[in-house]
Image (cartoon, rainbow, N blue to C red):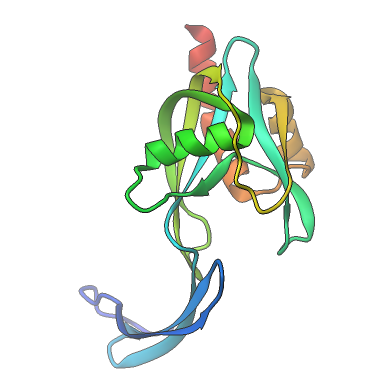
Length: 188
């Protein structure tokens, strides 16, 4: 193992777009990872940061998810309502828009976390919110694939994580992080 000085900071020396598609681009990065050592990396960019929302009805402990097809997994997976933050849009506005588009709800947003889902190769952050005080809103989606809104009991979703039926990382993390928020809301 190479010893690196404590004050050394990795630095991107050069970047080049090697692929540009409809929804992603790929960049090759030359990064100085230790003094005088250059390594090449490939990074995927998806057009900006994203949001994901865990809508929770604390009156009946129902949560609202979606089930959609993910081509890389070649499977329909449970996931959070989510989407890309549009240019000039705040993460909160994007979260409200995506929640309305995908599950037909609006609500009071509480920031839960910011995730780097796959920081080894994906240049995107996901801002995750809990949504409380839910109200019905007209669902006007813009999805590329069919999504199915799903309503589940919070505890059932946690069991589905344990059994391996829920595997999408942002959903797993949001459910586990939301446990204390849900317990606190149920006490009040």
